Length: 198
Image (cartoon, rainbow, N blue to C red; front, side, top):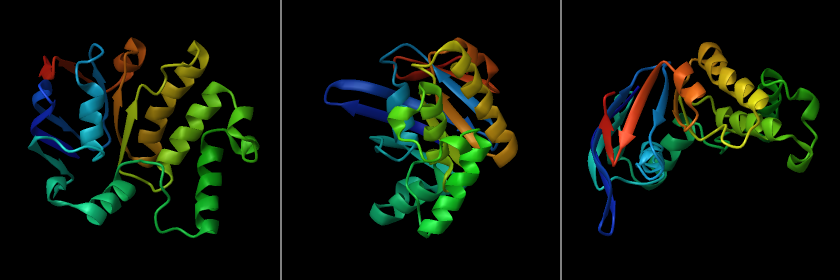
């Protein structure tokens, strides 16, 4: 589903990514781990097309995203990578899809609540629902359970696998949580901008 080769990224003199090669298969849940500052979030942003690498190639299911520019890239991201935007749907279609997702995430009774009226765990599930609104083939998550208590964290972790099994998504998660990483199909380790012992 995702293949990246030779990904480099620097900010001034700081080399953040030093030639990353990864592949993630369709319907796979992969955790990316490493110390703070190792380059995990930078790589996730590049894979999510929110930032461009200095060099390297990224393919999504056969599409070379380095060839996409402007609106083409935004449209690809909107339809394939699990971000929040609602693309090409009428208000009634979007509301119907949102209601369906909130039901799946056990939040149907919270449909009319404001974010401040939701618990931390409920807010995280709403964030997942927003990411799913366009039926993306890939979900990218950066520290999704970082500020949750253990009960909500465990529920969110199980949710990722339920999503994969129900909707067939490929999921790449940046996490410091050892339990979540251990549940994943595979762990990618990044250290000082390079992949180690994949």
